[in-house]
Image (cartoon, rainbow, N blue to C red; front, side):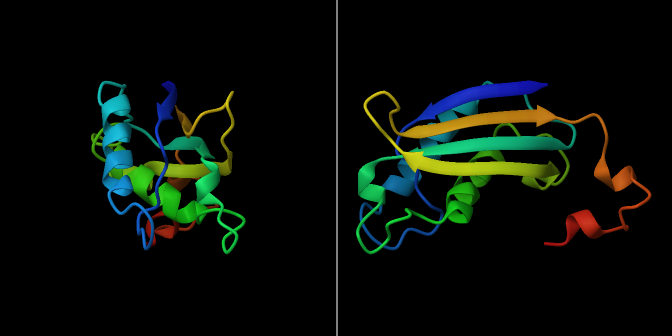
Length: 137
């Protein structure tokens, strides 16, 4: 299974502390709407995500934009209700992540490019991987 989708909207972090406090739930709803009818994963997978952020996400006191890990947290929490809903441990099935963020432009509006690929092997089956190493957290 291979999912490639663009989720339009303004990406928000999980724990918003300033600005538009309603933006987070709106972004979560956008993720749900775009991914609701996509295939669901049933195996370990790799995720590639690029967040496209409007310039207001890069204020002078935060010139590198919001924390990437917090952007991922909100995204994965929403995907747990759609794409990851049927797989054991939900987003815990993600064994590899490539994530980035960049400023939006007229040709590249705010949102997120998402690619999810199931993998054929399970890292837990690797004899070099110690039992329990994948489920620590």
